Image 1 (cartoon, one colour):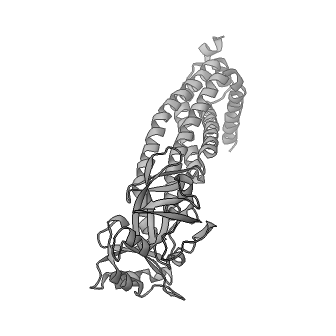
Image 2: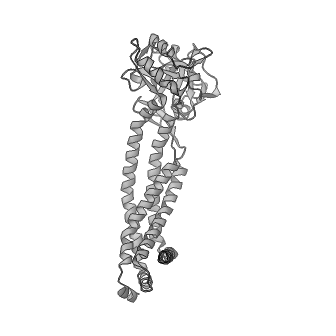
Image 3: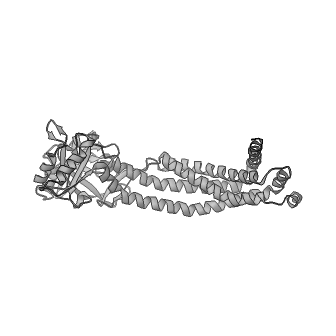
Length: 399
C-alpha cells in the first residue's frame, strides 16, 4: 500500500512540475490546444446536423400514431389510396374516435417550388392536403399566428420552419398552387417536428387543384393506445379489400431520417479523423518539446528515485489534460456556433425540403471529449516513453 501511495505521489510531483512549466512552452501548448479544439468543434458541429435532422423527424411521432401507405411504398410520394380504401382504414379496429368520428386523416402530399430566403434559389416545399381529423391526430400542432384555414376554401397554413426558411410564406401573402394564388392565413408550430416544414390545405380543395380525383397517398391514424397497433395492422393487412403497408409513426420517421443521418455521420467522423492526425502531430511536437526542455529535471527526479512508470504516467496525464482543455474549448465553440442554428436540407426519401435546427447534445459533447482524450493519449505516449528512458548520467550533464 505504501508503495502504491508513493507511486501516486511521484506522478503528482512530476505532473505538477510539468504544468508549472507550461508558460515557458506557451506557443507549442497553445497550438496543440487550438488544434484539438478545432477537431472537436468540427466533429460536434457536423454531427449536430444529423442529430437535429433526426430529432425533427422523430419528434413528430407519437406512441399511439400509425401511418398507412400502399403496399411496397416507402414514402408518401409513391403511395396511392382510393377513397374507399381510406374509409376501410378509418373504420378498422383500434382506431380512436372523437365526437366527429374516427381519428383518421386521409392525406395528399405534393411539392411546390418556393425560393429560399437566404439564397433565392428554388426548393421543393411539401404541400399537404389534410382532413379535419388531422388536427386531432397530430394534437401537438397549434396555430401561433393568424388562424386555421377554412374547410372548402383555397387557403393554406404554413409551418413555422417553412415560414422562416422560404420567402413568401408570411401571413397575408399568397402562394401559387396549380393555376391559383392561395392566401396564407396562419402559421403553426409542431414542437419542432417535420410538420413545421410543410404547408397545409384542405385535401378536397387540393385534389381539385391538382386534378387528383378522389385519391390520397396516406392515412394518418391515432390509435386508442400504443398496444392497439398490432390488432390494427393485422386487420388491415389480412383484409382482402386492401393492399397496404402499416407502420408505427416512429418507425416511418426513423426510416425517413436514416439515409441522411448515416451520410452526415460518416462524413463527420472522416473529417474529424483527418483533422485528428494533424492534432496528434501537434501533441507529439508539444510533448517532445517538453521532454527536451526538462531533460535535466527528469534526470534529477530519476536520480532521486522516481520510477520510469511514474514519469511515463505523468507525461501522458499532462498530454491528456492539455487535450481535454482543447476538447472543452472546441465543445464550447461548437455549442455557441451551432446549437439551435436553423436551416433546411433535402429529404432524399420525399425529395422535399425539411427545416430543422442543429442540436449539440450532451452525447455529442461527450463524444468530442473522448476524441480529445484519445488524441492526448496517442500524442503523449511516445514522448513519455522517451522521457522515461533518458539515461540519467548524461542527462544530468546537459545545460
